[in-house]
Each structure stands twice: as C-alpha cells, then as structure tokens.
Length: 433
Image (cartoon, rainbow, N blue to C red; front, side, top):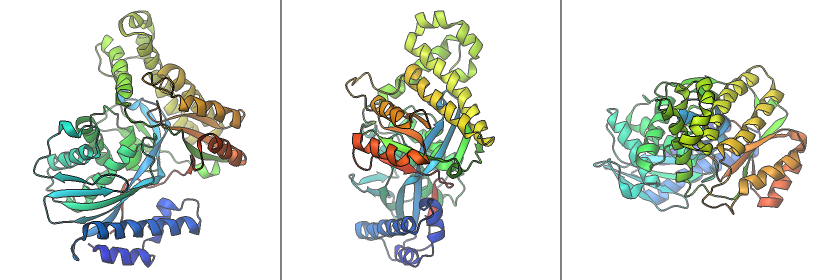
C-alpha cells in the first residue's frame, strides 16, 4: 500500500485521472476532471497536515456517494420496491493506518471525533451523531469476525447535509469502505456494506430508516431493488442512459434542514406498521392490497386517517417503482416522467411528507414544488426528494428549459441552490491507493 506522499505524487502525475473522470467528470469536460484531481490532492494533503501520519503508514482515498431516490418514496422500510441511484456528489476521504486502537476522523466544518475500538457498544450520548455511525459500522464489522485497528481520516463533502441526498448513508458507506479495504481484504460486498450502514443508523444513531439510502450509495449506478427479504435484497441495474433522455436531473436545495425531524420519519414507519399489525403482520408487504382496502373503515377507527393514507401511498408507490423501472427498460421516458409526477402527488397528499406538523410555518418544499410546476409548464417531472419534510426537491427538466428553471429556482432560493447532477456508475469505493 502507498503512503500519503506516494498517493499525492501519483494523483498529481495524473495516474488516477481515469478513475476520477468516471466518478466526477460525467459531463466529459476537462474542467470537471481538473477540479476532481485538485479536490483529491487537497484531501490527501489535509490528512497529512492534520494528523502527520508515519512516512510508511499505508494510505488510500475513499468515496461514499450521495444517492437520489428515483422511485418508491418510503417503501423500503415496508419491504417494498425502490428505484434509486448514486450521484456525483460524494464524501471523499483520505485515510491512513495509525497503529493504535483508535479511529480519528476530521470532517471539514465539523468537530473532530475519536472512537476507541476497545468499547463498541452503543452510547446514549452519541445518538444522532456521526460518532454513533462510526461506532456502529465498526461494531458490526468486528462482529462479522474481522480484526480492526485504528486509522486517521480527513473527510470533505459535496453532499448537501440534511438535503435528501442522504449524507448519513454516504458517511456510513465511506467508513464501511475504509474498514473493508484496510481490515477485511475487500471481502465485504456493496450490499453487505449497505446493510452494515443501516445497522449503524438504526441501532447506534437511533433513526429507524430502511435500507434504500445505503443501497443507493453503496451499489452505484441506477438500480431497482426489491426488499421483500431485506437480508437478501434483489438488486437489478437499470440499463438506461439518462444523458440521452433530453432531460437534466436537478436537485433543488430548499434551504430547509432535516435536523430534528427524526420523529416525523419514525411516525411514518410506526403508522404503516400499525396498519400491518391489524392483520397480524409487521410490514405492509406481507398484507395483500385487497385485504387492506376491504378493511379501510375499520382501520380508520383503529389507526387514524393519516395512517390509512400513508398505507395507501405504500401500495401505490410500491407498484409505481416497478413500473418506473420497466418504463426505463423499455425506453419509454415519457411514461417514466408520468409515473414520477404521480409519485410526487401521492407523497404530498397521502404520505404527507412535504412539511412537518412540528413547524407548519416552514413549507419550503411545497413552495418550491409550486414554483417548479409553473416553470416546467406541464413538461418534465418534479417531486419531493428522499425522506421529505425538509431538504430537497427532485426535477427532471427538459434540456431546453434548464436555464430558465435553474434561474427561477435560484431567484427564489439563492445562487447555487439548483444542482445539476449525474447518475454515477460507481458506488462506494476505494478511489486510489
């Protein structure tokens, strides 16, 4: 393995340009490649400046990408279907072994954290923190039989925190790939790394998330996933070249944060679970839609209207996710856009995750959706993105309308708030060693 000095020299010499271009220069421009190389060199140099690793300490560069949910909004935790993809915004880290029993991570803009490997049990005081995610990922990897030791890492990120691009999953996948590279000999598959990330988020971080975020980040490309058996999800790559669709994928930052919304997310899982429990089941995937619909009058009394509407959303969006993947496979992009718009409407009206009842004055997502529809004038598609309640909106914008759409969004929200993204073919990975 190379040292930090060797890694920096090889990056500057262009030895990793092909890999960097495949991850960060999906528009095919030299400027994008130059920026990616400069960023990679920056993070290696920052590790050296921050931690002063030993001259012979093995070092490598790692990436955990953000993910975009394309189809299936809040269906994964009910063992349903989703369509998602990794994007060219990521967390990039340089890590080097430190010969100790401690993990040190310095993330730009955040306090440094330190995790001792001698005690990896969950800690109450770490709930909802990055330290909980690192401890949880390390604990699960150790539980799988791998011997861990300490490392130092410096992290920089282009994933918008609290944005629906799932910065937490990107972080989990990043840490999982560091551990997999240094201590597991690459034995962990992308699916296993995703499952380890979900474990850390559920048990250590305290968020009852499904597996879609981690899977979209870890596997890479556009993928259709069937979570009927979450321990062995069926993952199918969606062979569709979005660059040939005549549309551009935009993620709009509504300038609202996912912070303090754990209860809102938990309510969705709890209420869908309550409907399933009426039938003696744990998840809605195990309840037939016909039985659910026949029981709606009783469910309204037992679980409340919102729970019933959220269950209705599950059945509809679970079906739509499969139809969206099929539309892409058939090259029917117009049909795909139609289904995407239907999904967005269901999320707003049935799932009710475009704003939080804890802060009804903050309705940034409905505001952006309203203006976005006006700018699109019946073309393309627009919908709430990811977990919802705050964060981002996703839009597929006809190329000829992109300049006007971007200008309109940034007039409302500020410069740089409308991000043009690409579906990146590679998920979490070791970029260079």
